[in-house]
Structure formats: C-alpha cells, structure tokens
Amino acid sequence: MKKKPKRPSPQRGARAPASKAAIQSSLGVRRAAIAALIETVETGRYIDETLSSRLPGIDSRDRRLLQEIGYGVLRHLNTLDQLINFHLRLTVDRQKPAVMWALRTGAYQIVYLSRVPDHAAVNQTVEALKSFPDTDGKAPGFVNAVLHKLARAVRRKTEDEPIDPDDPTVIPIRDGYCHFDRPFLKLIRLDRAAHLSLKYSMPQWIISRWVERFGEEETKRLCEAQNRTPSVTARVMRNAPSRDAVLEALKAEGLEAGPGSLDDSIVFTEAAGLEGSKTLANGWIQVQDETAIRIGWVLHPPAGARVLDLCAAPGGKALQLLEQVGPTGHVTAADQSEEKLELVRRNLSRAGGNFTTVLVPEDPDAIALSGTFTHVLVDAPCSNSGVFARRPEARWRVRAADLKSLSNLQSKLFEAGLRHLAPGGRIVYATCSVEPEENENVIARAFALHSSLTELDTKLFLPHRTRGDGGFYSLLLLSRT
Image (cartoon, rainbow, N blue to C red; front, side, top):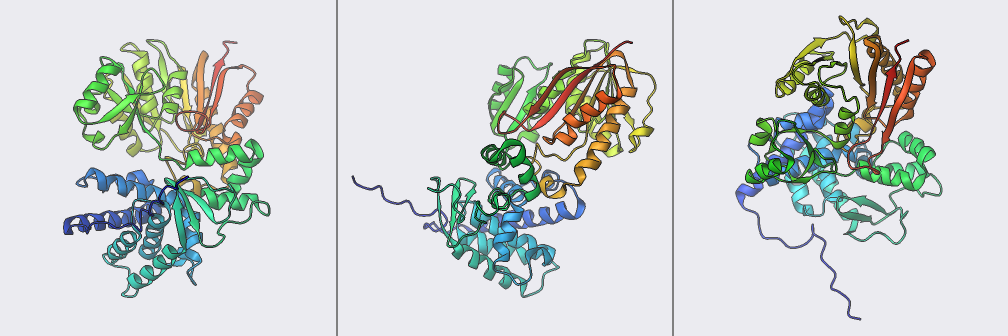
C-alpha cells in the first residue's frame, strides 16, 4: 500500500512573505496580549475584562488570535513555565513582568498553536516586547534566545493520538499533540498527579482531588473539557418573537449561530462583532451559558412573586427571574459593590419590569433587608472550579485551604438568604464550583441546622458530561410550620 505523503509541520512550512500592514497588526496582537496578561495579574481582574478594552479596532482574525493567546497562556501557565524554566537559570516567575509574559506568550504559540510559524511567534513576540518601558536593552535578545531553544525542543506536532497515551514526551495541544525531543512529564507510574498536572495544566492538588473522586480516566476527560475554548451561548429572551426569528436576525448581521440544547438557547459558531449586534441591543438575547440558564429557571417564581437575588452580579439570572415574575412581580437584586450593581441595573433595565438594586455589606451576618420574599436565589461566590475553561486564571488563584473559608462564607450567605425567605417559600443555592465543600456540604450543614427545609431538586453539572459549564444547584422548600 502506498503511503500518504507526510504533511509538513504548519509552523515550519513555507509561507508567502507577510505584508508590512499584516506584520504591524500581528505585532499589535502580541503587544496587547502581553499588556493584558500583566494587567490581569496586577489588578486581580479576569482576562476577559482586560482583553475587552483592547478588542475595539482590531479585526476579527487578529481578535481571535489575541483571545487565543490571552486565554491560552493563563490556561497552560504551569506547563509553559516548566518548559521555559528548562532553558533558564533564573526561573520565569522571577523575571520582570514584561519579560515574563513575553516568554510565556511566545512559548504558548510555539507549543500549543499549529498555525503560527515558529519564526512569527518568536520574532513578533520579541518585537512587541521592545515597546514596554521596564525592559532593558538585553531583554529582547534574551527572550529571542530562550524561545529559539524551546522551538528546537519541539520534535513535531501531530493530529493523531500517541501510541502510548501516557508518553512523557507528549502533551495535548490546541489541535492535536506536541512531541518533545526528551521526556517532559513525570512518569505516570511514579507520580500520577504530577504527570497529569503538567499534561493538562492543572494545579496538582486539584488533580489529586479529582482522581480520588472521579478516577483517572474521568479526571482526564474533565481536564480536557476545562481546557477547551468554551462556546458563546445566549438565551432567547421572552420579548423576542421566536428563536428562529432571532437566528435569522443574527444571520442578517453576519453572525453565525444555531439552536442550543435548551428550548431557549442558541450557540454561536462565530460571535465576532456580537457586542455591536442590533439583536443584542434590542433585548432579544442575553449572553449566558447553558448551565447558568438552567439554574436561572430552577426557582421558577410565578407571576407576581416577590424575589430576592442575593448575589446578583452580573445580572443574567436576575433578568430571568424578572421575566418570570412579570409586571405584577418584583425582583430585589443585591450585591456588595456599586460597580457590580450598575452592571446589574443595565441588564435588568432591558426587561422593563419592577426591580430594585440594593447594596449589602460584605459580612453576610449583617445583611438585613426589609420584609421577606417568596423566592430567594443565592448564587454564591466560589472557587470557579466548574468554569476553569471560561476563567482560566481562577485555577491558579484558588488554593486547597481556600475551600474551607469559601464554604464558611457560602453557608453564611445561604443563612442570610434563608432569613429573608417567607414560610412556604423556595430558595435555590447555586455555585459554579464542582467541589463538595462548596456544594453538597453547604446543603448538608443547612439541613443539620433547619429541620423545616425540604430538598426538592439537586444537580451537579460537570463540563465533560454536559453541554455548558460546570456548576451546582439545590432547590429547597421552607415549610410553613
């Protein structure tokens, strides 16, 4: 049988020379990526926030690359650092910020992307670094040398799975697998958690927990789901004529979308330009993940109900609740900062119903609102362990010790919500975590304290088992006696 000719590696294949304008545009993308990553870490914000201010004025192709690099670097941070540190005396996290993020940005393109040639990844990252004031004259040459060494360590990239799934010289990348010229991962039989941690770019303590709960194979699938680029989904709002009409309107605007797995959800195949969409501005859709949509419907208050959303920002679920209670109902949306409440107000104003926003203290024990509510939603702050794909930096910010303090805060928030629930009312506790300390254990603690609670429905969403993010909810009834 005649063998098929081997396809050349994309980053080493010949390409036509890029135009001067294209080169400048590519430089701008790398410069924006480095700046956004520096800002994300220094301010503690999320990468989607720091990228959003840099997206206007960038064309759709370069916008996709900017988002790919920004999210990808944070998603694969520990793996990139391990690869880079092999070629350094002073570890990457001890370099100046611009140098540190330039190294990581260049390394991500070399290792994880198959459509960016090595020379472009190196040269344009180095040129972008020169525009940062805190770098000395030697920095570009230093970064250039390190990235070239890393590029030479990549033997090949393939789409086919390796013969040995635990090969220590291979890691999964954006569109396949990257093979190195030497063992990079710990041997799985010697240190399973360390092997999987570097292979899938997850903190080792999280890997150990997941393997213990789910087993090795399911942990791998969970990690793979957490490393995928999440879909952009939206909920069709009640004032829209129909989902089909929404899809047609989006198509007319050049936005590609299709039906989601829920009756009122749509999934974008191409969402570039969505922020300027008339369909979005007209209040026909609300950008929202399908798991969040599911949680937003669980409380299901009837028309005329009095509802409290205790941790309301950014307001997607509060908007669902406002639609459900109709013109005779009322939603009180509470949160801890005016900045968050302003975002909630902008979202809720699109529905035209009756709502109030309330600033509440950080201490849940001090929350005291007037009157009681027939329905309460407590969508508590959490570790974000179910949404690492959407918030990649969260995996590096949370520590094992944080789960206890988060669980205590979540229980206090649930108690605050319960204090404001009228007898016979319903309360939903929800998180975007998949950790039992933040979910099942909080509910178990509530049952131990309150015999008047009845569990009506509880679900855990794992991102490799469902279409959407990971998360949890429990719907409870407070008896009248």
